[in-house]
Image (cartoon, rainbow over all chains, first blue to last red; front, side, top):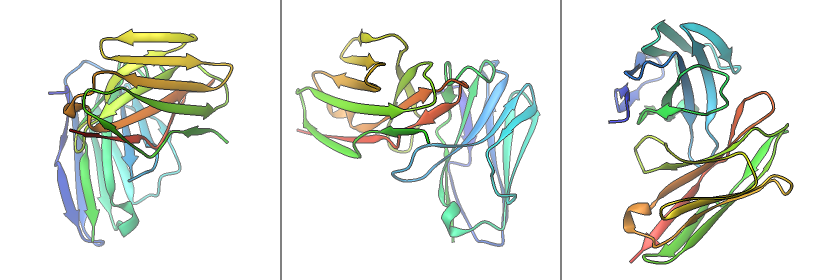
Length: 115
Length: 109
């Protein structure tokens, strides 16, 4: 149990589908992150939320839409995805953002396949 | 641009020692992390270096040379459970975390 739980663990979706990824943390952290991990590539930071406010969007296509209703929950809404969006999507949390990675806790990720 | 290089894959034998290298070119430096990630699982924190030198933690040690932009992770007395990917990441001057692509370590009996 990492303290950061992601659901579902696996997701297969068609390019016209709409689905959502969920992340929940029970660590009392105030910052939450979405990362994309593709094979043999570095982790790509997608979004950062600090105290429920989005503080970073790294030029992510609009077909990815984050939502952070409170400091414990983070969602990634997906629609009209492309096959190249197939990857492992990791959620992470930390006490607050701007710590440069210190104190990060990761979830186990959602393996997304777009067909 | 900012870049972190580490070997894509390494193979070692159970009971042996392996060294995984990481070189970086970043805009400033505020620390270097090593994470372990087993297939299908969360990356987990292994070590953090901000000053030059060797940090030892059980069978794992991490070394940093800031002047050379270089770090290594040393794993001793390798066990089968050490088969995993090892991720190197550097915090730059803006406290952004820059990641390497990871090194997949395969342990053979």
